[in-house]
Image (cartoon, rainbow, N blue to C red; front, side, top):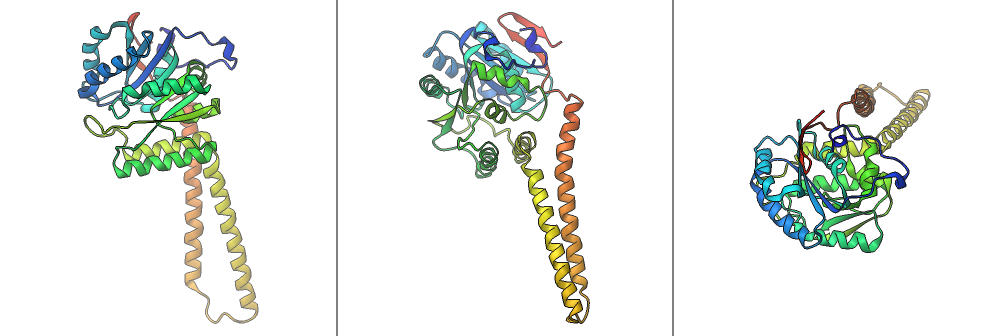
Length: 335
């Protein structure tokens, strides 16, 4: 547990050197503004897991939640004992970074990740477990029959899924409700930088990815922590960390604009030589300047996005820092 309090160590490329799992099942849940639902979540989760195995653990990562989620977790700890592992991060690092913290703590042969809002019913975990056991896959997503989100949220998520399929050439729809093997959970820990997109890291490490249909319920309390801005940020993490497509698009746009300008210039030169231009056009000049200026600013903005993220990662902006960890071995403060 002491090593798990530090930034994640690089995972070995040789899977035979990975330590063997100590438990059968680990469930990781990032916690953010979910104090009212934590008691119900744990009750349903333990009931569902106990029906599957008695060798399981539940890892709840408080991602800098501004409510009293951490206090609620501590009040619930005596009820669940060593099966419950709780970690409190020093600030809000984002869902995917919190999941990376949970993966560094997981000891199960199979690792389930899910949201804290009860939209992913714990009773559906058995479907994920059965699918990954029977199929030989490394990663299985629980794809909802029908999503109980607002229209704008579904639209934003659809954009991220489209980006995912474009970048990784994978028809699977990634969701927060997933199960992965212990080897895969360890293998993604080579990435210890910020701007994390977990599904991209998983797709980098394996092509054995599948899905199974699961139920999806409305939120039990409150509203989603994913705003439109966070969804845009997630899409940027996907593209800037795993793809050069934005730069390639800008290069193509620049080439197209340059060729259009060259052809337009050749056309007006011919018109001038043929004395077909009575009065030179001011509008043409203004339009050309605006188009070229806009393309240049767009290109600089995209390049700046890549350079800015590179700069922050070179300066080692932390992926996450644990303030305190409570597990079977007791409580420890972060190093």
